Image (cartoon, rainbow, N blue to C red; front, side):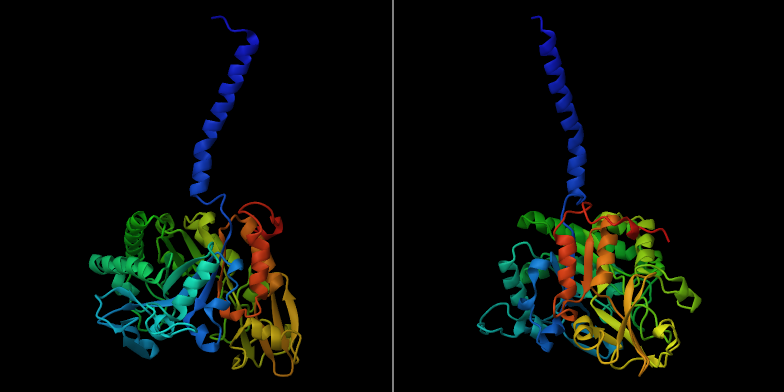
Length: 452
C-alpha cells in the first residue's frame, strides 16, 4: 500500500506526539514520587500538656493544617520512662495501667491525658479516651488531616542512644512503633532525638557511634512501617526533627537519612535565648552582621537550610520550623532599643512567652514598642522602663519565611506549637500563604533566596 504524503505526515505527527508523551512519563512519575506536585505541608506540634491549660485537641483549626505531631511519647527502659536527669520517671503504662515492655519500646508519655481521661460524652468503657480520642475525632471531621506521634523531645531523649546502639533494641523500637500507630490510630512516627552524639540534657546517653546508629534505627523503622503499610493498605509516615546547627549535621548522616524519611522538620528556632546574657533573635531568617559584631554567632534559618542542603538533603524533603513564642531578657540597655545588648538576664515574665500572650498583652501595649530588624526579617519588642527585650515571630516575619519556602523549593512549614497561637493568627497566615497553592508555583519572592 502506498501512503499519501498527507497520511505520512499525520502518522509522523502521531508518532512524535506519542514519543513526547512517553518521554515525559518517567519525569512525571518521578516528580510525583518526589512530591513535586503535592501541596505544601503545614505541620503543627500539639503538646499533651496543652489539655491541662484548657486547650483541647478538638479546638484545633485542622482545616489550616496538613499534619499534627503529638508531643510526646517516650521510650520504656527497665519498665520505666522519663528522665532522671530531668527529675522524674514513671512506670510504663497503657490505657489500662502499668505494663511490662521490652527495653526500647515506645510508650505513652502521659497516659492519663493521652488515653485514660474520659472526655465529655465518653465513659471508662471506651477503649481510647483523652487526647488521642479527640485527635481521632478531629481526623474524622477533617479527612485530609494526618497525625504523627512524636517520640522524645528535649526532656525525653535520654534513651535514644541506648536504643540505637544494638540490633535488638532497634528492632524492638521499630516493632513498637508499628504497634503504637495501629493501636492508637496514628498515621506516622516522628523522631525528635535531641541530640545524637551529644548536646542534649546533661546525663543523657550518648556515643560517637550515634551518627551511624541513628541511620540504622531509622532504616529499621522504615522497613517495619513499609511492611505494616503493605498489610494495612496505607503509607505510614516517618519523619525526624533535626537540629538547626552545624553540629547536628556533623553528628548525623543526613544524606542517608533523607532517603529513608518522608521529610525532615528543621527546628529553626531557639538560635538565641535566655541561657545567654546578650539579647538577640529567637529565629532570624538571615544572619545580621550587627549580631556578630556583638558577639552573637548562633546562626540563622537560612544558614541551617544551607547546611542541610550541603549535607545532601533534597530541598523537597525540608520542612522549615517556626516558633509560635518569643524569648525575652530583662535589664537591657536602651541602646539600639535593647537589641544585641548585654542584659541582666532572662526575663521571668518574658523568658518564653506564647505569641497569643504577646499579641494580647505586649505588642505596642503596656510600655512595649514593636521594632523590625530588616537584616534578619524579624520583629522585636522593647520596654525602656524595665529594659525588657523580646524576640518573636509575627505575621510579617512568617510571610518572609513562607516566601523563602517557595523560592527555595522547600516542602513546607512546621511550628512549635499550636498552644502558642490560640488566636490562630500565625496559623492563618501560614495557611493563606501555603495551602492555597501547590509547591513550586506562585508566591515566588526572589529576594528571599539570598546567598549569605
